[in-house]
Image (cartoon, helix red, strand yellow):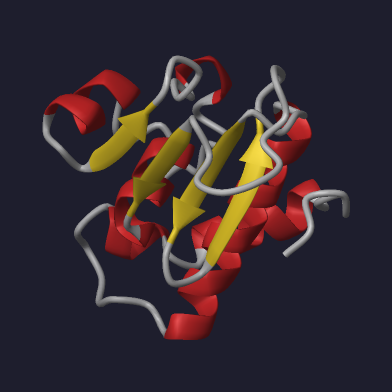
Length: 128
């Protein structure tokens, strides 16, 4: 999904709120479409908040974006990659999980000198 399209903050908050009970451990796993929407919108918001192409952030199977100012990646495997699962990404995006803890616990793979997203997290806060 292209990062150039702006994200409506109301749409982002609604998408994340729809999976909030699951993230808090108080609800069932959300439907795939709801989970995909929350991941994609939050990643697009990250790309808008941290414009650039030096880091590729991957949250399979839903989306990947390039962001963070710096040298542009053009071919092959990027030098700076962040990869995680949808739940971990959304916990980071909502401030339920700290970047350093996620990396230390092995829940986030972060390679490269620019692969630190902590300055841009959390992206959205939803009250439980």
